[in-house]
Image 1 (cartoon, rainbow, N blue to C red):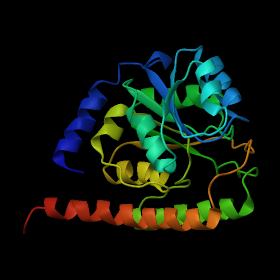
Image 2: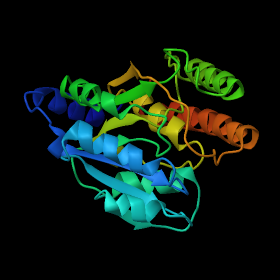
Image 3: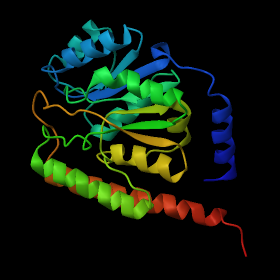
Image 4: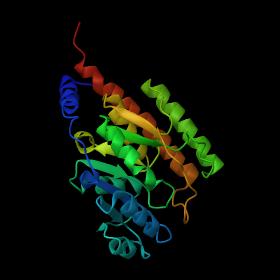
Length: 251
């Protein structure tokens, strides 16, 4: 981490007396033909946050997903389907509230744990990352679960820091973190959103979450998508390692 980033971290530490509420939170997601689940997800967010959290959906659906989202008060940004990362990146950058929470729209993630994520941000963590594998993730297909364990092992080896779930879709970020880093990946964006903050010495906390069986059909080919995620993990980890080299003082 550069001296400038250390200074930013110190400044954030000095500001920990400020306690964020759900009025400061945007919950964002990319949506693509999720009319079976999107209504329940948005209702859960509204119930848990008393309607205070802003919700932003970047949508490329051909079904009724955007109409359902609007009925629940979400801001919908329509976009041609271009992949997971493109949609989620747009969703993250659209709102201006200081805390951004990402989630998926398939009802696999526990919105009832949003208060826990906000509490951990208020304790000083820059990123809170939901760990689906902590409780076993029995609802996850076995091949996917094994793949996520492999991804975590590869990332841990390359970073020199133990992580447990690199591709979780449920995270909370301080906005200054996501705005300070240029994101480059698409399918592998979830891994990138964990690796770059960790290797820049932001305070990242993995937090156990329950993982439920998804509603509707998955849109990701597990083999093709898995290879792309593995490529992203290696690429991003090496980029961040090489990024530090020019800043080392000459001997």
